Length: 491
Image (cartoon, rainbow, N blue to C red; front, side, top):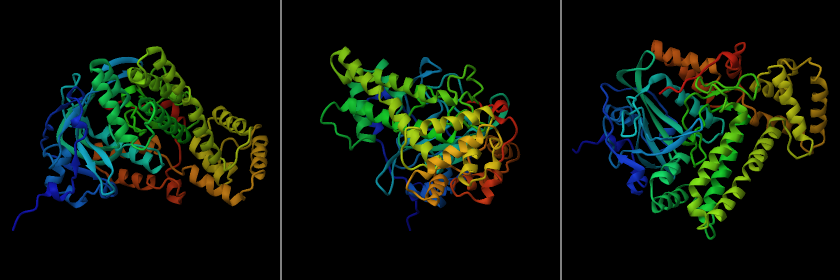
């Protein structure tokens, strides 16, 4: 009897279209093996959607693939090259601690990247060991899956394995590898790299590939590269609006961390805002607040301008015409962002139609929330269930007049109160990954090898709009959490 190959049995169905691009964009290399890999967590539902056999992935060979000790059939591992403006400063970068195994073709015919993050040094490593610590990899697992559940486009996390080796950061920490799934890892920084160090043919090949991979249905009968710019702008406007609507702060919106697919990527010093304040920053390295919550739309526009600059040679042979086309396209961003944001805010307040005074009503609420340090998520949750007394705004001089105007606004629409309530339930999550809950889960996992705290947290985060009593236990907020909490890049 012929023995089954667990690597094949796992369901890997790789293609390698990125490897067909000009070789300036990547370096082929084998993963770096680790001492004794151990599976910590596996995303069974994601595995199934990818056409993978979760049981086979848990076998010795399956874990070997997730750790980089074995290369699955059909994979063609490579490290991708890219550049990026990091806090406004341009640098030559690349996958310094990650490898793209290949592109999994799912049962639905979708193409997704499968990447090992923390897999060791590559030619693009800049002085580091190319490895990752367990805590940051579990953080990305928790936050990326929570974002997906919230309905926000995001990379996904398939698995985390420990390596059996410690890595040195401020202290000795257990090493780990995250298996990340993405629509692709094409970034603004990918185009910046090719624009600076590639040829005109390389740039056109990358642009054509991006169009084919992410925008196959757009009309390219006219200026196909202008269409590419418009589509990327459109997706980023939608994405950043969704971040703002749930109080998510990315923390490191460098151009190499803006995915052209419109997915949230690279969960380093990210966190969710508790008390509403546009100036909120959690990242320990963002000392000037460049990537503060309220700055995220402006930074997205800045990053998109850098993307547009790389496309200028493709937009028009006359540079001045190319610049004019790019500027016209970029001018759409804030209008698109505002449309997505105010539509989402109307939903959070149970409003179905549009009135000119809606924005003033919304901004008055946010102003109150900032003045009285009201919790962002819990305030909208209290409004959803008409529990005014559950928010610190109740009893303030501004509250009753605002509440009356809001109720009058709802009464002017045709939809019944029950419909507004349902709209608010589906627009306002009961739960977000509260910072102290995430830290509690990570501490138990890293310090005590107790993964049950994380598993319970993931379970309640998986249905954020369910509004169950169990979720209520995870919605409490420690005092002054915005001011004292700090996150780190986790390299």
